[in-house]
Length: 114
Length: 114
Image (cartoon, rainbow over all chains, first blue to last red; front, side, top):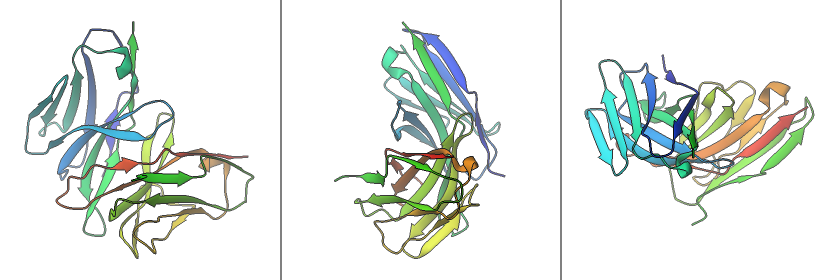
């Protein structure tokens, strides 16, 4: 089945690192993504990783992928108050029409305390 | 480019009423999709389309119809609204090549069914 799970809330202090975790069930995922949703807005792509990679670093963001355990994580270094948002994990899967569809997780609400 | 536009931004319906949520994109994207966002449930895929004339069901299609007569437009129809359809609805679009494609989201439509 297709299921993407995340914890609902995370609270960290400004300047600390945040780690947001995600587990997925479909091993045929080709790409995995992290999207950010600010209050009252749609989602925006933050970063992504190809399924044959273990790690990707992009400035303050580090994505780790454990394919064996179907576990994806997003680490935000030196978390700032502007990082407060909902973070969604997503995967792209082969859909019924022979092309790709995208499944999103439940979202993790990150609150950064000053 | 306007990106992905959705109308209306807010809507209140009575149980049993019908309405159409509009979505349009000007990026010539083949892939378009509708999600609903509910607290603690994340984004759930309702329907998606990989091109004009082609649509497919997502995780929660019941109570919703879609059609894709042009590349630009992907309206979502509620035939007989129910309180369980109270939610925030997001339309997204993206390309189809090779599995990786950033999804671009509209600003959302907040629907309340009384």
